[in-house]
Length: 186
Image 1 (cartoon, rainbow, N blue to C red):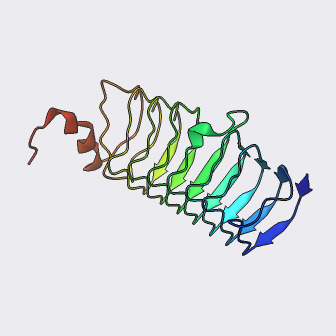
Image 2 (cartoon, rainbow, N blue to C red):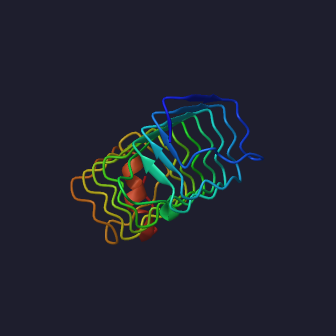
């Protein structure tokens, strides 16, 4: 186990991580793209300005992990360990990521690009989407109760196929709830 260490500008595309468990570590400007991070646990870690695009994260533990200004293209978070999964994203590119059927209550997405992200079957109760772009993201059988979309845009959510009790929206974004009806609003 590696505890309380900082990793700066390390390129992990050619290296293996020395440990299977990292606690309270900081990764800054590290490159994990296309790396195999399977079966590794990150506990209370922070990733800043890192690239984890297309990394393999099968059974990877993300327990209270924060990502800031990271590139997370195509990550399948639905493959990671569900045990104590707590994530926080700020200014991240999560395009083409998958959160299929994950329990992500109280997750914060702040100023993130979430284009074509799969949220189908996920529980996003009380989650906050603060200034996010949700172009072509998938919400199907998703629990969005008390979720906050007030400052986000480009979402298309079918209120019939998703649980949305007390979710928060603002104009003109709320028009994304009517997209399925193919109506014109002036």
